[in-house]
Length: 191
Image 1 (cartoon, helix red, strand yellow):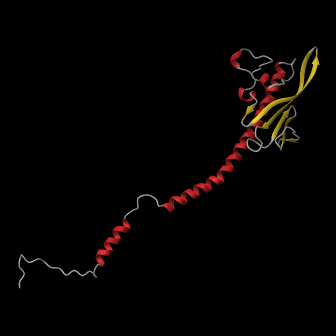
Image 2 (cartoon, rainbow, N blue to C red; image 1 turned 180 degrees about the vertical axis):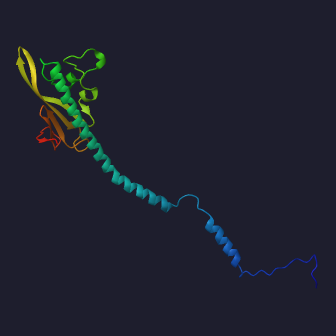
Image 3 (cartoon, rainbow, N blue to C red; image 1 turned 90 degrees about the vertical axis):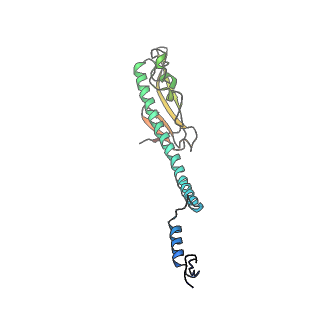
């Protein structure tokens, strides 16, 4: 029996001898990258983001309250400066006993005792950055038939105690004091 051209080439295939075939298949599977993230990876990332949010939310509230506090103090200082300017420009009236007298629209005409145009509208509205502002305790003296205001107290209290602010502030000629309970019983000097 000879090998002719028409005789098929017969190989002896041994199913137990798959050493090279398995190695190449493993290599192909190992180099293949998965498409996207696994569910476990996504859950871990979401848990980390949740933990960071829980840590950051109280900090944001504290930062907002601190910003409101600083704004209230600066606003009281601006009102005190406006009161000094008012007393210099309108000596017969003394100080102003309302925020609207210290404010006024610059386009409405010349400044007057009822609209001196010393303060911006955001303060003269009485509400700014979570605080409510007012001028109270005005002491009047009658001089020559005209009431002259000789003293005043500026108050700034939080709109919502604990949320927009914690302390109330009071200002007059002598400086700024505060009430740690958020009211207008200001007994402690601001440093």
